[in-house]
Structures are given as structure tokens and as C-alpha cells.
Length: 193
Image (cartoon, rainbow, N blue to C red; front, side, top):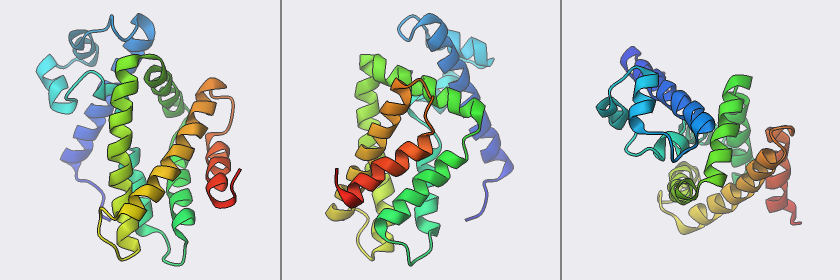
């Protein structure tokens, strides 16, 4: 897959800079007390520019770049890998690309998503979209239609296991290695409890 052009990279950089300011303000002031105007001011953009990147304040927490990374990893995985090994590799590859500063932001976003009711609901919606988005390249690998029920159900099981790993990571304040937690959570799908 070709890398994005300069214009797209600048847009992505702006998007994640806005998110970084939003998460920082949410952590400092609380989610409900923070306005889009405050986020825009901190990011040195206009509120209308904020809404070009994020449709809602909730999206500034729940959206990330990892679905795209994982979908690419699923598409590009060696053909001999099983569906579970393909998904395992995709999730682990995505987490391997997170540096320590970004890991702290992911941890803060996960804390917010678990503690703010509006964000929990938006996260649930986002999770459903992610499952379908990630199931499509898996279904393609299997020679099936993008909305194949079994591929979506399988990806839902994998994402559910990963959510358990992320929740454990958040509950332990980031002390655990998230990749090890992901490995263990996905092993349950293969082996049972």
C-alpha cells in the first residue's frame, strides 16, 4: 500500500494534534467542563476547523488511527496464517507502533471512555463500526463478501477479547504490557477459558 501524500499527512497530523489537546483538557478540567471552543483555542484552530476533523466532542476521544493500521495488517498478512493468527498479528502490529507518549494518550482516552457515560455510548457505536470495518478485509482473505456474517462474528469475538485486555490495562493504570494482555485474551478464543 502506498503511503499518504503530504497533504493527507498534514491533515492527519492536525487531526491528532487536536485530539491531543482535547484529551489533555478533558483530563485537566473534566469532559463535561471542556468546550469545543477551549479545545480549538488550545490547538490554535477555529471551532469550525475542529468540526471538519471531528463531528462531535466525543469523536475527539473515540476516533483513532488504529483501525486503518489493523485493516492494512490484515490485508497484508501472509496468506498461510489462520484467521486468528492474522487478527492477532494485526492487533499486535498496531500496538507495536505506539510509542510511550502515545501509549499514555491511549490510556487517558480509554480512562475517559470508561468513565464518561456519553463516551461509553459513543465508544460502543464506534466498536460496532470497527468490527465491521476490520471484518471486511478478513472476509476478503477468506474469499467471502465484506459483510459475511461469520467473519463479522469472528471479528466481534476478537474485539471483545481485546476490549477485556484494554480494560485490564486501564484498571492497572498501564502497568501491564498491553501486547501480552492481547496475546492472552486472544488465546482464550483459540483454547477456551
